[in-house]
Length: 398
Ligand SMILES: Cc1cc2nc3c(=O)[nH]c(=O)nc-3n(C[C@H](O)[C@H](O)[C@H](O)COP(=O)(O)OP(=O)(O)OC[C@H]3O[C@@H](n4cnc5c(N)ncnc54)[C@H](O)[C@@H]3O)c2cc1C
Image 1: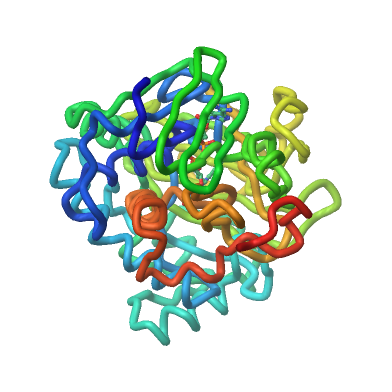
Image 2: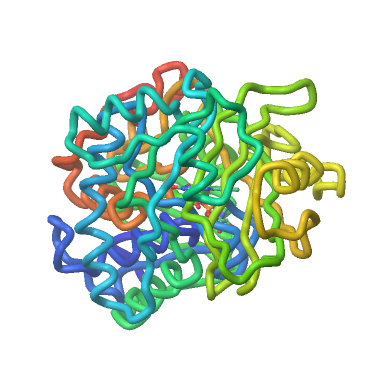
């Protein structure tokens, strides 16, 4: 029976990055023969059921936490390495605009602490007042106290192109990429793993678990339950009514109102997704659930806040969306950004789950492979350790 050097469970952005990094000579770990690497995905690859659904994500350096900005900086050469191996531009560099009430904190941080971090780390940005936000960037009717900054290094991540690039590299190296293989159970004696799927059983030396919001079902017998909540979120595409209008990536920090958290973000026009349209989305969920099976589709009312924001504050866009989508993201219950760690008691199993991780994709896959193959990484991942409270009695750290 075939035994793999590495089995990756989950074929989203992080799973495919792990497979790509496993066969990469630049990973700071032993390079695996692709024939000895297996990726198991319950759905089709490039599916829309996980957190990787949709066409675009924001790439940004600014964070309230210094270690996060440093991690994004460490991801830059990894993106460059991936870019060299594909033709399509993965992150068009359009810059990133943060503006609004400078004292509003969000799950994504805040304007003031982000500026402080960038100042400390020498990341360039330009401060903007309300008048400049309106005159230079096309927003309108902003409250007079709004201010913000433009960070020129930000960009829009082409998600389909990034997935395809990593998939192609893995495939060309012989990695076994198996769609429609749902993993039902993972067993390990600490040295070898047995992976039971609805299509058969596989054996391997190491395993990386990147099942996103679905993580806890497979973790339960391994003695870990991540305290997370799953946000179901919507996104909408508004038709451009003026050819000359475009936006960078942006995020509006605002105080919550009676109806919702009142936070919105958006993108420039992207030629790979609804050209002639601008994507705008609320940064608040229409539904919070404990596990993916509880997910329901959004209703038209779930887009009302976004349409109102566009009508009130954006120039050159039709006020009602023509295309909409939804996506779920798992977020840690505490103040961690995401979870990246080996499982207590199972040094051959690495877990990545939760968080806003698209901007770090090639780096996170590299770290997963380093941890799986060598048990260590030089990258500072202590902030992402599995919290002791998420370790159940059977899975004490050895
Ligand atoms: C609306 C939205 C906006 C976002 N915006 C940003 C942003 O601007 N910037 C940013 O950096 N990040 C952003 N993110 C976060 C980013 O998209 C995620 O961090 C990233 O996509 C996570 O990828 P993943 O591979 O960990 O998870 P997923 O994409 O969910 O992949 C997990 C995969 O595992 C598979 N799977 C699950 N269970 C099993 C099983 N039992 N057996 C086999 N396969 C299984 C699933 O089918 C899925 O394909 C956003 C997320 C959302 C939802």
